Image (tube, rainbow, N blue to C red; front, side, top):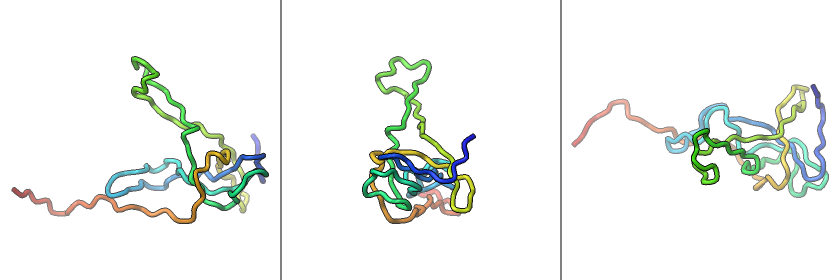
Length: 138
């Protein structure tokens, strides 16, 4: 097994954290992300030598579409009609030590997979509010 203490990606590659949601995320009562789902935005851990406008520590929104793998049900009539695809994502993972020396799961991307860099924070939307006393009205 490979134990990486410091990583330097080549050319246009970047390494990001592999953060996941710690709890279900709601927006107006609708679950938009489940606990354990991979976040579509990550923090950059390392950048390649020819990467422009992205620096270590930046928060980036990633395009996962290039990593989607479609698999169709066994009894699907035609796979090319996009009927009932099961989608999973295949990412390149690597374990890199953080500042304290603890191994951290990271992902390897190309700079073309970054949609944009941003500053901000995650905000939990409002969960669905259900009244304590239910009343039936006409």
